[in-house]
Image (cartoon, rainbow over all chains, first blue to last red; front, side, top):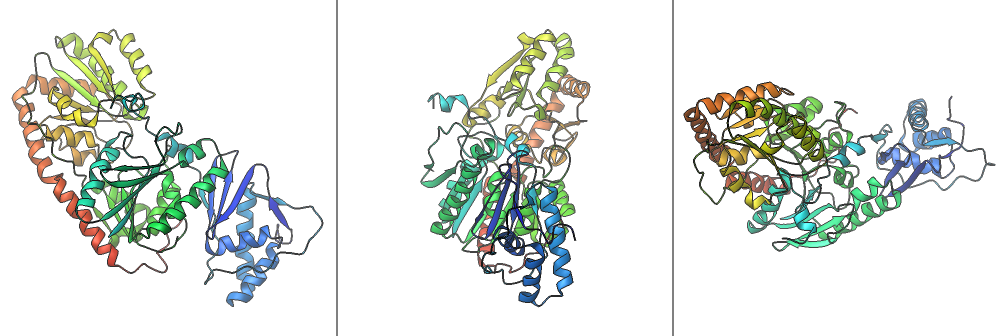
Length: 139
Length: 381
Protein backbone atom coordinates (compact mmCIF):
# COMPACT_ATOMS: atom_id res chain seq x y z
CA UNK A 1 0.00 0.00 0.00
CA UNK A 2 2.97 2.31 0.55
CA UNK A 3 2.00 5.96 0.81
CA UNK A 4 -1.32 5.68 -0.99
CA UNK A 5 -3.40 6.27 2.12
CA UNK A 6 -1.16 8.97 3.51
CA UNK A 7 -1.66 12.65 2.94
CA UNK A 8 1.52 14.13 1.53
CA UNK A 9 3.16 17.51 1.52
CA UNK A 10 6.04 19.24 -0.17
CA UNK A 11 9.41 18.51 1.39
CA UNK A 12 10.18 22.13 2.15
CA UNK A 13 12.57 23.88 2.19
CA UNK A 14 14.50 21.37 0.08
CA UNK A 15 11.82 21.36 -2.62
CA UNK A 16 10.11 24.28 -4.35
CA UNK A 17 7.17 23.86 -6.69
CA UNK A 18 4.61 25.82 -8.65
CA UNK A 19 2.02 25.15 -11.34
CA UNK A 20 2.37 27.22 -14.51
CA UNK A 21 0.08 26.87 -17.52
CA UNK A 22 -0.93 23.39 -16.46
CA UNK A 23 2.63 22.23 -15.85
CA UNK A 24 3.82 21.41 -12.36
CA UNK A 25 7.38 22.70 -12.10
CA UNK A 26 9.39 21.28 -9.22
CA UNK A 27 12.95 21.96 -8.17
CA UNK A 28 15.19 20.10 -5.77
CA UNK A 29 17.22 23.01 -4.47
CA UNK A 30 19.78 20.69 -2.90
CA UNK A 31 20.60 18.61 -5.96
CA UNK A 32 19.72 21.25 -8.54
CA UNK A 33 17.40 18.76 -10.22
CA UNK A 34 14.42 20.07 -12.12
CA UNK A 35 11.20 18.14 -12.62
CA UNK A 36 8.22 18.65 -14.86
CA UNK A 37 4.74 17.16 -14.60
CA UNK A 38 2.12 17.58 -17.29
CA UNK A 39 -1.31 16.19 -18.13
CA UNK A 40 -2.43 13.44 -15.74
CA UNK A 41 0.80 13.75 -13.75
CA UNK A 42 0.10 17.43 -13.14
CA UNK A 43 -3.51 16.62 -12.23
CA UNK A 44 -2.42 14.10 -9.60
CA UNK A 45 0.11 16.60 -8.30
CA UNK A 46 -2.54 19.26 -7.84
CA UNK A 47 -4.78 16.80 -6.06
CA UNK A 48 -2.00 15.73 -3.71
CA UNK A 49 -1.12 19.34 -2.99
CA UNK A 50 -4.80 20.04 -2.28
CA UNK A 51 -4.81 17.41 0.46
CA UNK A 52 -6.10 14.36 -1.42
CA UNK A 53 -4.55 11.00 -0.60
CA UNK A 54 -3.17 8.99 -3.48
CA UNK A 55 -5.94 6.42 -3.01
CA UNK A 56 -8.67 9.06 -3.22
CA UNK A 57 -7.03 10.68 -6.26
CA UNK A 58 -6.76 7.31 -7.99
CA UNK A 59 -10.41 6.51 -7.31
CA UNK A 60 -11.53 9.88 -8.64
CA UNK A 61 -9.45 9.53 -11.80
CA UNK A 62 -10.67 6.00 -12.43
CA UNK A 63 -14.28 7.17 -12.14
CA UNK A 64 -13.70 10.23 -14.29
CA UNK A 65 -12.06 8.32 -17.16
CA UNK A 66 -13.90 5.01 -16.76
CA UNK A 67 -10.72 3.03 -16.17
CA UNK A 68 -10.33 -0.07 -14.03
CA UNK A 69 -9.63 1.35 -10.53
CA UNK A 70 -6.87 -1.16 -9.83
CA UNK A 71 -4.89 0.06 -12.85
CA UNK A 72 -5.07 3.71 -11.86
CA UNK A 73 -4.33 2.86 -8.24
CA UNK A 74 -1.17 1.00 -9.27
CA UNK A 75 -0.12 3.90 -11.52
CA UNK A 76 -0.63 6.45 -8.76
CA UNK A 77 1.18 4.32 -6.20
CA UNK A 78 4.16 3.97 -8.49
CA UNK A 79 4.10 7.69 -9.22
CA UNK A 80 4.01 8.64 -5.56
CA UNK A 81 6.86 6.23 -4.97
CA UNK A 82 8.93 8.11 -7.55
CA UNK A 83 8.13 11.45 -5.94
CA UNK A 84 9.05 10.11 -2.51
CA UNK A 85 12.26 8.52 -3.80
CA UNK A 86 13.33 11.92 -5.10
CA UNK A 87 12.54 13.43 -1.67
CA UNK A 88 9.94 15.64 -3.29
CA UNK A 89 7.04 14.62 -1.04
CA UNK A 90 6.91 13.53 2.58
CA UNK A 91 4.08 12.37 4.81
CA UNK A 92 1.96 15.15 6.25
CA UNK A 93 1.36 14.58 9.96
CA UNK A 94 -0.86 17.62 10.38
CA UNK A 95 -4.51 16.96 11.34
CA UNK A 96 -6.65 16.05 8.31
CA UNK A 97 -8.35 18.93 6.60
CA UNK A 98 -11.04 19.00 3.95
CA UNK A 99 -9.37 18.24 0.59
CA UNK A 100 -9.51 20.89 -2.11
CA UNK A 101 -12.10 20.83 -4.85
CA UNK A 102 -11.91 18.30 -7.67
CA UNK A 103 -9.75 20.04 -10.27
CA UNK A 104 -10.29 20.44 -14.00
CA UNK A 105 -8.60 17.43 -15.53
CA UNK A 106 -6.73 16.68 -18.72
CA UNK A 107 -9.00 15.44 -21.52
CA UNK A 108 -7.55 11.93 -21.43
CA UNK A 109 -5.78 9.69 -18.97
CA UNK A 110 -2.06 9.03 -19.38
CA UNK A 111 -0.15 6.95 -16.85
CA UNK A 112 1.67 9.54 -14.73
CA UNK A 113 5.31 10.24 -15.53
CA UNK A 114 7.92 12.18 -13.58
CA UNK A 115 10.18 13.97 -16.06
CA UNK A 116 13.51 14.50 -14.34
CA UNK A 117 16.16 16.90 -15.59
CA UNK A 118 19.26 16.00 -13.65
CA UNK A 119 21.61 17.45 -16.26
CA UNK A 120 21.18 21.11 -15.41
CA UNK A 121 24.81 21.45 -14.33
CA UNK A 122 25.99 20.03 -17.67
CA UNK A 123 23.79 22.47 -19.53
CA UNK A 124 25.12 25.36 -17.47
CA UNK A 125 28.66 24.25 -18.24
CA UNK A 126 27.96 24.99 -21.91
CA UNK A 127 27.65 28.67 -21.07
CA UNK A 128 30.18 30.56 -23.15
CA UNK A 129 31.93 33.50 -21.56
CA UNK A 130 31.13 36.84 -23.11
CA UNK A 131 34.13 38.08 -25.10
CA UNK A 132 35.90 40.85 -23.25
CA UNK A 133 35.83 43.16 -26.24
CA UNK A 134 32.06 43.39 -25.78
CA UNK A 135 32.09 43.89 -22.04
CA UNK A 136 34.90 46.44 -22.37
CA UNK A 137 32.92 48.36 -24.96
CA UNK A 138 35.67 47.96 -27.55
CA UNK A 139 33.25 47.03 -30.32
CA UNK B 1 5.57 33.10 -41.36
CA UNK B 2 6.12 34.06 -37.76
CA UNK B 3 9.06 32.12 -36.37
CA UNK B 4 9.89 32.06 -32.68
CA UNK B 5 13.60 31.28 -32.71
CA UNK B 6 14.93 29.67 -29.53
CA UNK B 7 18.68 29.86 -29.12
CA UNK B 8 20.30 28.96 -25.79
CA UNK B 9 23.02 31.55 -26.23
CA UNK B 10 23.11 34.16 -28.91
CA UNK B 11 25.25 36.93 -30.24
CA UNK B 12 27.32 38.58 -28.85
CA UNK B 13 28.21 35.28 -27.16
CA UNK B 14 30.64 33.56 -29.49
CA UNK B 15 30.66 29.99 -30.67
CA UNK B 16 29.95 28.14 -33.86
CA UNK B 17 26.19 28.03 -33.34
CA UNK B 18 25.91 31.58 -32.03
CA UNK B 19 27.87 32.99 -34.94
CA UNK B 20 25.75 31.07 -37.43
CA UNK B 21 22.54 32.19 -35.71
CA UNK B 22 23.70 35.78 -35.91
CA UNK B 23 23.72 35.54 -39.71
CA UNK B 24 20.81 33.13 -40.00
CA UNK B 25 18.16 35.23 -38.28
CA UNK B 26 18.47 38.36 -40.45
CA UNK B 27 18.79 36.18 -43.55
CA UNK B 28 15.49 34.45 -42.79
CA UNK B 29 13.89 37.79 -42.14
CA UNK B 30 15.06 38.87 -45.58
CA UNK B 31 13.25 35.84 -46.95
CA UNK B 32 9.99 37.17 -45.61
CA UNK B 33 9.75 35.51 -42.20
CA UNK B 34 8.97 37.51 -39.12
CA UNK B 35 11.55 36.39 -36.59
CA UNK B 36 11.65 36.74 -32.81
CA UNK B 37 14.77 35.52 -31.00
CA UNK B 38 14.39 34.26 -27.45
CA UNK B 39 17.66 33.50 -25.71
CA UNK B 40 19.17 33.41 -22.25
CA UNK B 41 20.85 36.22 -20.45
CA UNK B 42 24.28 35.85 -18.92
CA UNK B 43 24.61 35.83 -15.16
CA UNK B 44 26.20 39.28 -15.06
CA UNK B 45 23.23 40.75 -16.86
CA UNK B 46 25.19 43.30 -18.89
CA UNK B 47 23.08 42.77 -21.97
CA UNK B 48 19.59 44.29 -22.15
CA UNK B 49 16.54 42.10 -21.80
CA UNK B 50 15.00 43.53 -24.97
CA UNK B 51 17.33 44.07 -27.89
CA UNK B 52 17.48 43.67 -31.64
CA UNK B 53 19.84 42.52 -34.35
CA UNK B 54 19.46 43.86 -37.86
CA UNK B 55 15.87 44.77 -37.11
CA UNK B 56 14.98 41.41 -35.54
CA UNK B 57 13.80 41.66 -31.93
CA UNK B 58 15.65 39.69 -29.27
CA UNK B 59 14.31 38.83 -25.83
CA UNK B 60 16.82 37.65 -23.24
CA UNK B 61 15.47 35.71 -20.27
CA UNK B 62 17.42 35.39 -17.05
CA UNK B 63 17.02 31.63 -17.06
CA UNK B 64 20.67 30.63 -16.78
CA UNK B 65 21.27 33.01 -13.90
CA UNK B 66 18.20 31.63 -12.16
CA UNK B 67 19.43 28.04 -12.49
CA UNK B 68 22.97 28.97 -11.52
CA UNK B 69 21.62 30.41 -8.28
CA UNK B 70 18.97 27.72 -7.79
CA UNK B 71 16.54 30.61 -7.67
CA UNK B 72 13.20 28.89 -8.13
CA UNK B 73 11.22 32.11 -8.03
CA UNK B 74 13.18 33.47 -10.96
CA UNK B 75 12.89 30.20 -12.87
CA UNK B 76 9.12 30.38 -12.53
CA UNK B 77 9.18 34.06 -13.49
CA UNK B 78 11.19 33.25 -16.63
CA UNK B 79 8.72 30.54 -17.59
CA UNK B 80 5.78 32.86 -17.14
CA UNK B 81 7.57 35.59 -19.08
CA UNK B 82 8.25 33.19 -21.93
CA UNK B 83 4.62 32.09 -22.05
CA UNK B 84 3.56 35.73 -22.29
CA UNK B 85 6.09 36.54 -25.00
CA UNK B 86 5.04 33.48 -26.97
CA UNK B 87 1.33 34.21 -26.66
CA UNK B 88 1.82 37.83 -27.72
CA UNK B 89 3.95 36.87 -30.73
CA UNK B 90 1.58 34.06 -31.78
CA UNK B 91 4.16 32.14 -33.82
CA UNK B 92 3.35 29.82 -36.70
CA UNK B 93 6.38 27.73 -35.79
CA UNK B 94 8.87 27.45 -32.95
CA UNK B 95 12.41 26.69 -34.10
CA UNK B 96 14.69 25.42 -31.36
CA UNK B 97 17.97 26.24 -33.09
CA UNK B 98 20.28 25.72 -30.11
CA UNK B 99 18.92 23.58 -27.32
CA UNK B 100 19.76 23.91 -23.66
CA UNK B 101 18.03 25.23 -20.59
CA UNK B 102 15.86 27.34 -22.83
CA UNK B 103 14.33 24.15 -24.14
CA UNK B 104 12.66 23.71 -20.77
CA UNK B 105 10.47 26.66 -21.68
CA UNK B 106 9.00 24.96 -24.70
CA UNK B 107 9.52 21.22 -24.60
CA UNK B 108 7.79 20.31 -21.35
CA UNK B 109 4.27 21.44 -21.93
CA UNK B 110 2.07 22.39 -24.86
CA UNK B 111 1.77 26.14 -24.64
CA UNK B 112 -0.89 28.21 -26.33
CA UNK B 113 -1.12 28.54 -29.22
CA UNK B 114 -0.10 24.98 -30.16
CA UNK B 115 2.29 25.20 -33.11
CA UNK B 116 4.80 22.83 -34.70
CA UNK B 117 8.22 22.61 -33.10
CA UNK B 118 11.32 22.30 -35.27
CA UNK B 119 14.32 20.99 -33.31
CA UNK B 120 17.80 21.47 -34.72
CA UNK B 121 20.55 19.45 -33.08
CA UNK B 122 24.12 20.69 -33.32
CA UNK B 123 25.52 19.25 -30.12
CA UNK B 124 25.82 15.70 -28.87
CA UNK B 125 22.78 14.72 -26.79
CA UNK B 126 24.60 13.20 -23.86
CA UNK B 127 25.56 14.25 -20.39
CA UNK B 128 29.16 14.06 -19.25
CA UNK B 129 28.49 10.55 -17.91
CA UNK B 130 27.33 9.27 -21.28
CA UNK B 131 23.63 9.15 -20.37
CA UNK B 132 21.19 10.77 -22.79
CA UNK B 133 20.32 14.21 -21.53
CA UNK B 134 16.66 14.26 -20.48
CA UNK B 135 16.09 17.64 -21.99
CA UNK B 136 17.01 16.41 -25.46
CA UNK B 137 14.70 13.40 -25.10
CA UNK B 138 11.88 15.76 -24.29
CA UNK B 139 12.68 17.86 -27.31
CA UNK B 140 12.73 14.82 -29.60
CA UNK B 141 9.43 13.72 -28.13
CA UNK B 142 7.67 16.93 -29.03
CA UNK B 143 9.37 17.95 -32.26
CA UNK B 144 7.36 17.87 -35.47
CA UNK B 145 10.66 17.70 -37.34
CA UNK B 146 14.28 17.14 -36.28
CA UNK B 147 17.44 18.23 -38.06
CA UNK B 148 20.96 17.13 -37.22
CA UNK B 149 24.14 18.66 -38.58
CA UNK B 150 25.80 15.32 -39.27
CA UNK B 151 24.62 11.88 -40.29
CA UNK B 152 26.30 10.38 -37.26
CA UNK B 153 24.40 12.74 -34.97
CA UNK B 154 21.14 11.93 -36.72
CA UNK B 155 21.84 8.20 -36.34
CA UNK B 156 22.50 8.78 -32.64
CA UNK B 157 19.23 10.66 -32.23
CA UNK B 158 17.30 7.96 -34.07
CA UNK B 159 18.86 5.33 -31.82
CA UNK B 160 17.64 7.33 -28.83
CA UNK B 161 14.20 7.93 -30.29
CA UNK B 162 13.33 5.60 -33.20
CA UNK B 163 10.01 7.39 -33.70
CA UNK B 164 11.79 10.39 -35.22
CA UNK B 165 13.16 8.40 -38.17
CA UNK B 166 10.45 9.53 -40.62
CA UNK B 167 10.50 13.12 -39.36
CA UNK B 168 14.20 13.87 -39.29
CA UNK B 169 16.91 14.87 -41.74
CA UNK B 170 20.56 15.83 -41.95
CA UNK B 171 21.13 19.49 -42.72
CA UNK B 172 24.85 20.15 -42.84
CA UNK B 173 25.76 23.47 -41.33
CA UNK B 174 26.23 26.31 -43.75
CA UNK B 175 28.54 29.24 -43.30
CA UNK B 176 28.51 32.55 -45.15
CA UNK B 177 31.32 32.50 -47.67
CA UNK B 178 34.29 34.56 -46.46
CA UNK B 179 34.89 37.90 -48.08
CA UNK B 180 38.55 37.24 -48.79
CA UNK B 181 40.43 34.76 -50.95
CA UNK B 182 42.76 32.16 -49.48
CA UNK B 183 46.42 33.03 -49.43
CA UNK B 184 49.21 30.48 -49.90
CA UNK B 185 49.90 28.31 -46.88
CA UNK B 186 52.73 29.87 -44.87
CA UNK B 187 55.51 27.37 -44.30
CA UNK B 188 58.46 29.47 -43.21
CA UNK B 189 57.75 29.27 -40.38
CA UNK B 190 54.61 27.14 -40.26
CA UNK B 191 51.72 28.33 -38.13
CA UNK B 192 49.30 25.95 -36.42
CA UNK B 193 45.93 27.31 -35.34
CA UNK B 194 43.25 26.26 -32.85
CA UNK B 195 40.01 28.21 -32.48
CA UNK B 196 37.27 27.86 -29.92
CA UNK B 197 36.11 28.20 -26.37
CA UNK B 198 38.97 27.26 -24.10
CA UNK B 199 37.27 24.38 -22.36
CA UNK B 200 38.99 21.19 -21.31
CA UNK B 201 36.71 19.29 -23.70
CA UNK B 202 38.16 21.18 -26.67
CA UNK B 203 41.54 19.52 -26.08
CA UNK B 204 43.79 22.49 -26.83
CA UNK B 205 46.24 21.08 -24.30
CA UNK B 206 46.75 18.17 -26.72
CA UNK B 207 47.81 20.60 -29.45
CA UNK B 208 50.30 22.14 -27.01
CA UNK B 209 51.66 18.71 -26.12
CA UNK B 210 51.98 17.94 -29.82
CA UNK B 211 53.90 21.17 -30.33
CA UNK B 212 56.64 20.26 -27.87
CA UNK B 213 58.39 17.67 -30.09
CA UNK B 214 57.57 19.70 -33.20
CA UNK B 215 59.36 22.72 -31.78
CA UNK B 216 62.57 20.72 -31.69
CA UNK B 217 62.20 19.56 -35.30
CA UNK B 218 60.60 22.47 -37.15
CA UNK B 219 62.40 25.81 -36.80
CA UNK B 220 60.17 28.70 -35.87
CA UNK B 221 56.93 26.69 -35.77
CA UNK B 222 54.20 28.42 -33.77
CA UNK B 223 50.83 27.51 -32.33
CA UNK B 224 48.15 30.15 -32.14
CA UNK B 225 45.09 29.64 -29.96
CA UNK B 226 42.13 31.95 -30.52
CA UNK B 227 39.51 31.92 -27.80
CA UNK B 228 39.19 32.19 -24.10
CA UNK B 229 37.79 30.27 -21.18
CA UNK B 230 38.67 28.31 -18.08
CA UNK B 231 41.29 26.11 -19.80
CA UNK B 232 43.43 29.08 -20.80
CA UNK B 233 45.37 29.23 -17.56
CA UNK B 234 46.13 25.49 -17.45
CA UNK B 235 47.13 25.57 -21.13
CA UNK B 236 49.51 28.47 -20.54
CA UNK B 237 50.99 26.63 -17.56
CA UNK B 238 51.40 23.50 -19.69
CA UNK B 239 53.22 25.41 -22.44
CA UNK B 240 55.47 26.92 -19.81
CA UNK B 241 56.22 23.55 -18.20
CA UNK B 242 57.07 22.07 -21.60
CA UNK B 243 59.47 24.94 -22.32
CA UNK B 244 57.52 26.13 -25.37
CA UNK B 245 55.71 29.14 -23.93
CA UNK B 246 57.44 31.41 -26.46
CA UNK B 247 56.04 29.28 -29.31
CA UNK B 248 52.38 29.55 -28.23
CA UNK B 249 50.28 32.66 -28.79
CA UNK B 250 47.13 32.98 -26.71
CA UNK B 251 45.15 35.44 -28.77
CA UNK B 252 42.06 35.63 -26.57
CA UNK B 253 38.72 36.16 -28.26
CA UNK B 254 38.94 37.04 -31.90
CA UNK B 255 35.93 38.73 -33.44
CA UNK B 256 34.13 36.36 -35.84
CA UNK B 257 34.58 38.85 -38.67
CA UNK B 258 38.37 38.46 -38.30
CA UNK B 259 38.45 34.67 -38.25
CA UNK B 260 38.97 34.24 -41.99
CA UNK B 261 42.01 36.54 -41.87
CA UNK B 262 43.38 34.59 -38.93
CA UNK B 263 42.93 31.29 -40.75
CA UNK B 264 44.56 32.80 -43.83
CA UNK B 265 47.71 33.32 -41.78
CA UNK B 266 47.77 29.68 -40.66
CA UNK B 267 49.30 26.63 -42.34
CA UNK B 268 47.16 24.00 -40.63
CA UNK B 269 44.05 24.20 -38.45
CA UNK B 270 43.83 21.70 -35.60
CA UNK B 271 40.57 20.57 -33.96
CA UNK B 272 41.81 18.38 -31.08
CA UNK B 273 38.46 17.94 -29.29
CA UNK B 274 38.10 15.19 -26.75
CA UNK B 275 34.29 15.46 -26.60
CA UNK B 276 31.88 14.41 -29.32
CA UNK B 277 32.00 17.31 -31.74
CA UNK B 278 28.75 17.13 -33.67
CA UNK B 279 30.39 19.02 -36.52
CA UNK B 280 32.98 21.66 -35.64
CA UNK B 281 32.25 24.94 -37.38
CA UNK B 282 35.95 25.72 -37.31
CA UNK B 283 36.55 22.86 -39.73
CA UNK B 284 34.14 24.45 -42.21
CA UNK B 285 35.75 27.86 -41.82
CA UNK B 286 39.19 26.33 -42.36
CA UNK B 287 37.96 24.50 -45.45
CA UNK B 288 36.50 27.70 -46.87
CA UNK B 289 39.98 29.23 -46.57
CA UNK B 290 41.58 26.16 -48.20
CA UNK B 291 43.36 25.01 -45.07
CA UNK B 292 43.95 21.35 -44.30
CA UNK B 293 42.49 20.31 -40.96
CA UNK B 294 43.85 17.86 -38.43
CA UNK B 295 40.95 16.74 -36.27
CA UNK B 296 40.13 14.19 -33.63
CA UNK B 297 38.00 11.38 -35.02
CA UNK B 298 35.01 11.97 -32.76
CA UNK B 299 31.32 12.71 -33.22
CA UNK B 300 30.60 13.87 -36.73
CA UNK B 301 34.16 14.98 -37.49
CA UNK B 302 34.66 12.21 -40.06
CA UNK B 303 32.00 14.00 -42.11
CA UNK B 304 33.64 17.39 -41.61
CA UNK B 305 37.12 16.16 -42.53
CA UNK B 306 37.59 13.46 -45.16
CA UNK B 307 40.63 11.63 -43.89
CA UNK B 308 43.52 11.87 -46.34
CA UNK B 309 41.47 14.00 -48.74
CA UNK B 310 40.68 17.28 -47.01
CA UNK B 311 42.73 16.76 -43.88
CA UNK B 312 43.78 14.10 -41.41
CA UNK B 313 41.86 12.41 -38.63
CA UNK B 314 43.67 11.32 -35.49
CA UNK B 315 42.55 9.25 -32.50
CA UNK B 316 41.12 11.02 -29.50
CA UNK B 317 43.51 12.04 -26.69
CA UNK B 318 46.56 11.37 -28.84
CA UNK B 319 49.05 14.25 -28.93
CA UNK B 320 51.63 12.02 -30.60
CA UNK B 321 49.23 11.35 -33.48
CA UNK B 322 48.63 15.10 -33.86
CA UNK B 323 52.40 15.64 -33.96
CA UNK B 324 52.83 12.96 -36.64
CA UNK B 325 49.97 14.38 -38.70
CA UNK B 326 51.50 17.87 -38.61
CA UNK B 327 54.87 16.48 -39.71
CA UNK B 328 53.22 14.52 -42.51
CA UNK B 329 51.61 17.66 -43.90
CA UNK B 330 54.67 19.86 -43.44
CA UNK B 331 56.88 17.25 -45.11
CA UNK B 332 54.69 17.28 -48.19
CA UNK B 333 53.37 20.81 -48.57
CA UNK B 334 52.03 20.24 -52.12
CA UNK B 335 49.83 17.49 -50.69
CA UNK B 336 48.77 19.78 -47.85
CA UNK B 337 47.90 22.51 -50.34
CA UNK B 338 45.91 20.02 -52.43
CA UNK B 339 44.00 18.89 -49.33
CA UNK B 340 43.11 22.50 -48.59
CA UNK B 341 41.89 23.06 -52.13
CA UNK B 342 39.76 19.94 -52.03
CA UNK B 343 38.37 21.04 -48.67
CA UNK B 344 37.41 24.40 -50.15
CA UNK B 345 35.61 22.81 -53.08
CA UNK B 346 33.79 20.44 -50.74
CA UNK B 347 32.81 23.29 -48.43
CA UNK B 348 31.39 25.25 -51.34
CA UNK B 349 29.19 22.29 -52.19
CA UNK B 350 28.32 20.84 -48.79
CA UNK B 351 28.21 23.97 -46.65
CA UNK B 352 26.73 26.47 -49.07
CA UNK B 353 25.05 29.26 -47.14
CA UNK B 354 22.22 29.77 -49.66
CA UNK B 355 21.51 26.03 -49.71
CA UNK B 356 21.48 25.98 -45.91
CA UNK B 357 18.97 28.84 -45.83
CA UNK B 358 16.90 27.14 -48.54
CA UNK B 359 16.68 23.98 -46.44
CA UNK B 360 15.29 25.80 -43.42
CA UNK B 361 13.12 28.12 -45.47
CA UNK B 362 11.55 25.03 -47.01
CA UNK B 363 11.10 23.39 -43.61
CA UNK B 364 9.50 26.54 -42.21
CA UNK B 365 6.99 26.65 -45.02
CA UNK B 366 6.21 22.94 -44.96
CA UNK B 367 5.94 22.61 -41.20
CA UNK B 368 3.87 25.77 -40.88
CA UNK B 369 1.17 24.05 -42.91
CA UNK B 370 1.30 20.77 -41.05
CA UNK B 371 -1.40 20.01 -38.53
CA UNK B 372 -0.04 19.76 -35.03
CA UNK B 373 -0.16 16.13 -33.85
CA UNK B 374 -2.66 15.80 -31.02
CA UNK B 375 -0.70 13.01 -29.40
CA UNK B 376 2.97 13.10 -30.39
CA UNK B 377 4.71 9.76 -30.31
CA UNK B 378 6.06 9.10 -26.88
CA UNK B 379 9.70 8.30 -26.35
CA UNK B 380 10.57 5.87 -23.59
CA UNK B 381 12.17 7.60 -20.61
